[in-house]
Amino acid sequence: MVPTLYLFDRFDERLGILPAVGGITHVEEVGGEDTIEFDCLAAPEKGERLLWRDPVEGAWREHVVVRTDEPLGLPAHVYAESSLCELLGDFIEESQLVEKTAAQALAAVLAPTRWTAGDVGVGDVTHGCLLYHVNALAALRRIEDVWGCEAEAEISVSDGRVATRTVSLPARRGAWRGARFSYGKTLAACTRTVLEDEVFTALYGYGKGLPIFDEQGVATGGYTRRLTFGSVNNGVNWVGDDEARQVWGRWNAACTEKLHRFGSVVFPDCEDAAELKALTEAALEAACVPNVSYEVDVAAVDGGAGARLGDDVAVIDSSRTPEWHLKARCVRRVRSFGEDAPEVRLTLGTVERTAWAASADVAARVSAVEETASVASDTVASYEDLGSEEF
Image 1 (cartoon, rainbow, N blue to C red):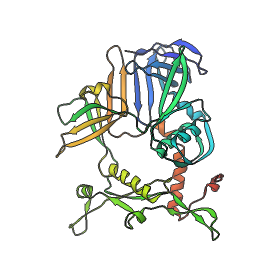
Image 2 (cartoon, rainbow, N blue to C red):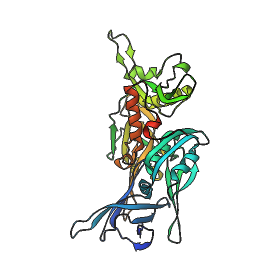
Image 3 (cartoon, rainbow, N blue to C red):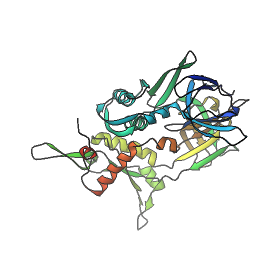
Image 4 (cartoon, rainbow, N blue to C red):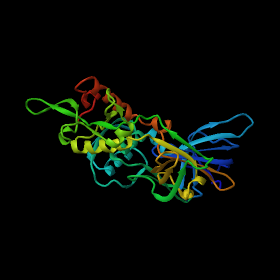
């Protein structure tokens, strides 16, 4: 079951086969890590490429060597990331996407790269965002966030080498394949983690800063306070969940009524009050319950042998009273390929994005600057302050 690793140099010239000593571990998670690790006698060079065929799913995968540990007299340890990481070396100086579909946005992001755009599963809904001084991988993550989709790399092979590299944007990776898992019974191979995220029973929602116009109706380049949705919500700029308030709220001073626990969420690209309300309600659905993840060996999941990244899994948590019946998601999968059938460990529920993904998210730094400015003042700097122009 150990896949064959075909070794290529940095310029896609085939060098031969790289034999692994022992097994190969493949780690992948939604919106983040996709890596392989293994030991070998002769360490490959940084930047060389590894092409291999998934022995379970049959798909071709390509990884780039990013680190090697080479102890004297012992096998070298190789750490390689998905070839999607090469987008870190493609740069976008500025691209302002206005009323674009996800397909148009993906084409703009991939324009400076050698990757081609594949299928897009979110229809023709339009959004907009500013891509400013970012690498192409950070821009791709930004597209995922704004258009609500999940990028997936696809590799095709012809004549023993990579023929095409494609990025598709399904609305959501994975599917329902009937896998079920019960927590609270005699299971040695399971860990439940209740994450530290705050639980909020009500959320204020804020959208894009509204532009300021002068007396002649000409935009000044400045922005006012952020959009709210009180105009379509009976004058109230928040939405709440009363059932969650009874469970997770807190007493008032007289201990006669349970009050909401308030939080806030910002959608910096939203310009419509009704859409902002809907987005805030969707965010509240996730915020009003604890974030829980279950790390479990696939043997403990009924029908879990075929579970793939992004799949939904039915979970019954009988350790709670009443029992929790929920549909969790396979957000991380670790497979160890050895001589026998692969060992598989799934993380069901919620998982933090790894440093691998966060390191590419330069766009988030620009967004953070905008958020800080909007809190400190009623107006924030226009795009011109960043040296760009509206067009």
